[in-house]
Image (cartoon, rainbow, N blue to C red; front, side, top):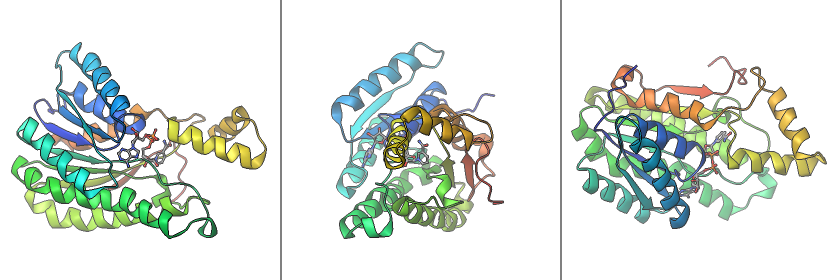
Amino acid sequence: MDLGLEGKAALVGGASKGIGLAVAQALAGEGCRVAICARGEETLRAAAAALRLRSGSGATGAEVLPLVCDMAQYADIKRAVAQAAAAFGRLDILVNNAGGPPTGTFDELDERHWLHALEQNLLSAVRATREALPYLRRSGAGRIINITSVAVKQPIDGLMLSNATRTAVVAMAKTLSRELAAEGITVNNVCPGNIATERLISLIEERARRQGQTLEQAVSLEEGRVPMGYLGDPEDVANLVAFLASGKARYITGTTIQVDGGSTTALL
Ligand code: NAD
């Protein structure tokens, strides 16, 4: 299916690794110009070079713009959105993504943890959306896609901050989707389940340590919880994001879709 994304411009948060990088790859592979954000300049530049190489060898070739940006800092977000729009002359697609907050129960988390999680995992989406909206409005087919977690359908024990901040993103997105629908801008949430990235492996390692298991035991336990029997790849999430970013998904807005190999048991 040709997604018709050639010539569009996208900004992807948290994109030097993992799901964000796979999303940038999928969009670049479709001929999108992509700005990728992360805090560490070296890893970011290496990711951009790899993206250019991979997409450049394909039919479309793509422009990739690395932007050092801490998604927890409003000034960084403002600058990144302005730089992307200036470099590409437009912005059509915003993918809100950042690293996950630390694990912990209520008793283990203090005010500082909460404030940082709110900045990184809720306000990042609010602020990037605010800054990008003028450009998305001009696009005529603007797209806002928030990477959240299956935790918004079934809160996960021990992930207090993730459960709380991501459900707020979903509530914001639903409300916003109705406010922007008449302008042709869609707003959707994508919820990864168990996707094999550094983030997931470090969560599994932590769990293994707490429960006195080896990493292999903990991984196979995790795989056993997925009806499909294996962990997903970042590309499994990226494929859905690319579709939602395209004109093919013009009538899909306000949704929250999991990519989890069937592990969520909630109905909605
Ligand atoms: P990851 O840790 O592998 O990659 C995160 C990326 O974001 C990296 O490029 C990192 O440098 C960047 N980043 C982190 N914090 C940032 C910040 N403040 N500003 C800018 N860039 C930042 O994570 P991932 O597995 O790709 O997960 C992406 C998001 O999806 C996270 O919020 C994660 O919690 C969520 N999620 C992941 C899974 C999973 O199974 N992997 C499941 C549910 C939810």
